[in-house]
Amino acid sequence: MTDIIKLTAAETAAKIASGELTAVEVTEAHLARIEAVDEKVHAFLHIDREGALAQARAVDEKRERGEKLGPLAGVPLALKDIFTTEGVPTTVGSKILEGWIPPYDATLTKKLKAADVVILGKTNMDEFAMGSSTENSAFGPTGNPWDLTRIPGGSGGGSSAALASFQAPLAIGTDTGGSIRQPAAVTGTVGVKPTYGAVSRYGMVAFSSSLDQGGPCARTVLDAALLHEVIAGHDPLDSTSIDAPVPPVVEAARNGSVEGMRVGVVKQFRGEGYQAGVIQRFDESVVLLKELGAEIVELDCPSFDLALSAYYLIAPSECSSNLARFDGLRYGLRVGDDGSHSAEEVTSLTREAGFGAEVKRRVMLGTYALSSGYYDAYYGSAQKVRTLIKQDFERAFEQVDVIVSPTTPTTAFPIGERADDPMAMYLADLCTIPTNLAGNAAMSLPCGLAPEDNLPVGLQIIAPAMQDDRLYKVGAAVEAAFVEKWGHPLLEEAPSL
Picture 1 (cartoon, rainbow, N blue to C red):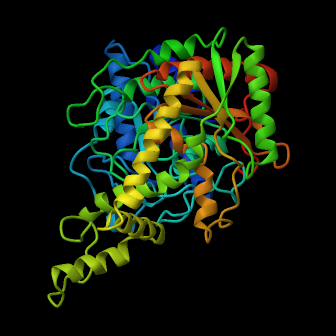
Picture 2 (cartoon, rainbow, N blue to C red):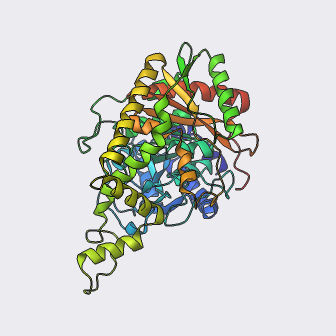
């Protein structure tokens, strides 16, 4: 089992296609791993054992019939519990949808099934994707496999923890303000936020519609590229979906190079609040990029200092609108429907019981920001700042091909440390938020361990919209150089497991 679960997704798919392994063997190995360690990690909210084995058997039958298998056929995957999956519970980490079983698949879920990817189950997350630590899940926090007393990032901590604990070689996350990249950084894995609109949002429960983006999570850059290619593409069911070819991400990942590229370093992405070990590993990464043939260019993007404030007006405003549909009348939890309460009272009682503290906080912030007399002062001003951030990126990309930065200001912090300090929690997304506001593509990949706590540090790479292949070209080159110099941080299991 240990040998199977340590394989990359690309290696697993090749062994299944050649007949060296069966998809059922691979799936059973990962289900056994989940059974062995997930009680400690709590990466999953629901395991679809029967469904996963049925998908695996179908792959083996295809191979026996001589049918050509796709590049990820038979490879297991952990799916963030924000994508609807027909016949499988989808809770978004919230009591308000506890036990809800969707009657349809999200477009992303359909694409995974069509590619014969084996979906193991649904992963834990901050409720409605609101959080930076996966402590806001209504079903309890997830532990970081490197140290189970620390957070695995958020909101997609279940997906990142599943990868880092070898419970799945692939996972899916969503990124509204950094919720793919930030978990990747603190667990030593790879996470990519594609260009906004590159991956369909149909069937993805909405938090902030102008920011939300699904994307691939993996343990290597190539694995992330293979998954990216499966899930991306135009979807007429999503009005924000980009009708354009998917960039050649797999080709870029197989031919990584930074030779002759201009790489930008933004001065706003360092300073007060950044852990010394994080900055040390980032500076070493910049030196490495230079050694690999890149030209380093210093950039000044002054509006990035306003990104956090703008995000925490725009995202709550959109979540206030999106979550209005959870009224206790149509689906999900319903409280107080005993004949003695009005519809308005049932809605109020349901939301009181079904929503957690962070969701209530953001709905209240958003409702206030959108209210009469305050709209222009708050939401309107935040949208103006968003435009300034986009303009800063446009000017930057006239000078450079990609931008690099630390993914997070610190390594994984202890569970509970920031629970009573929302502002400290929000600062975890300091480096990732500007990209969401602009709609660009970005990746986080491991760049070593911080010397003071021996925990993973992430390097963020940012590319212009619809130039996602640049992420993989640079990421693959950096990954190869790191592995050659220092080895992959996940070659050994986290000691706590």
